[in-house]
Amino acid sequence: MTYDYDLFVIGGGSGGVRASRMAAAQGARVAVAEEYGFGGTCVIRGCIPKKLFVYASHFGEAFEDAFGFGWTVPTRKFDWATLVANKDKEIARLADLYRQNVMKSGAEIIMERAELLDVHTIHLKGSNRRVTSQYILIATGSRPSRDLGDCAGSEYVITSNEAFHLPHLPRRIVIAGGGYIAVEFANIFHGLGCETTLVYRGEKILRGFDEHMRDSLTEAMNNKGMRIVTRRTFHRVDKRGDEFFVLTDHGEILETDCVMAAIGRRPNTDGIGLEKAGVALGAKGEVLVDKYSRTNVEHIYAIGDVTDRLQLTPVAIHEAMAFVRTVFEKKQTPVDHELVPTAVFSQPEIATVGLSEEAALQKGHRIDVYLSKFRPLKHTLSGREERSLFKLVVDSDNGRILGCHIFGQDAAEIIQVVAIALKMRATKADFDATMALHPSAAEEIVTMRSKSYSKEPSPD
Image 1 (cartoon, one colour):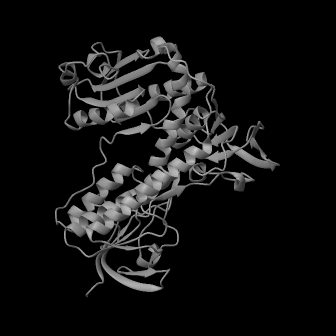
Image 2 (image 1 turned 90 degrees about the vertical axis):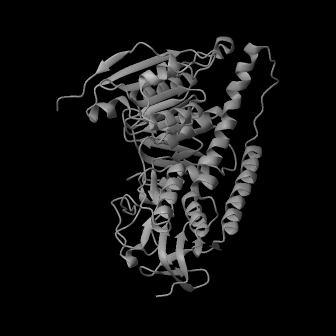
């Protein structure tokens, strides 16, 4: 059979764009369908705008810290509209750059919604056309979940999507959630001057992260004046005039000017015809794939958030490259989800790579743990009572570093380099043999000589 395309990509986010460009570079006839805008969640309503807002939220403390270094800062004034406008300008530039790069690769851009009709046929809704492709790649990403259970008044609740376009900065905000998105937005809004309350159903924020990191950030957020309410969920949200009243399942009433849900993300699989092609989905609506990102249908693949494996932009890009190598370069390349560095852009940051202490024990490792908690040099003059924490989890039997966890300023910048060392299976002896760079926070990684404690896995 002759197809219109060799590859048809549904979704113009980071994964879809990378796959289309690489496949086109191999001489494949490629089309990319995108109904909204190029760049996907990361560029348009995720990583990039979030990080710009994170930068903005840092200046309040920076102005305060400056006094200890001899600077006199005039009366501070923040303008939300200026931040949003400048953010939108940068996002538009990046989205256009993504689009141009796809065009330069030789792939065809189709700005329409695409839906599957069968294994090889796609319906383009805007132009009511049908096209065929030998291979189809699903890269439609994910969206914020609005599932607040039986909470009445959930229509008053915004998500991270709307948070980037609020008409004005609220004086008070209540955020539901305890994952990294909820924590990051709590720090953002607090840093911009909002009275911030975080409501989380669990016992402790940042489930899945190392316990020392979770505890350190909780303490820091409390010290900064953020309110963290755990073991609570939203029962009802009422609106009276311009105010909202959140009633928790324990009967507390929280008065606020804005209510936000950051309770996870859902794969974008609704209404794109996957059932017509026979593509299997998981319990959350995620596309089920094997280690090569192949679905249960031979010529249909899926990458990125829509598969609900690791919802991170670099992971989607890696999966795209592995897909192209497997399908178009004929080099079977499974995706590699081991030792993926991650960060929480809180204040201070958390960054981690490898196993947490708890995960290492669960996997049966005997471990030595090295901890270093200290006051950063900057704050000896700023006067801020803030502590950094560095942690190494080491295999007791062979000395290999299983995990590195950092809580402190620029943690994300440090962990990226550490990830290379762990990927090369570095040992504690390798770190000890590395010369320190002084004065820096990062030198703690190579100067921790005395282990804090050891642990053995449970016999169960």
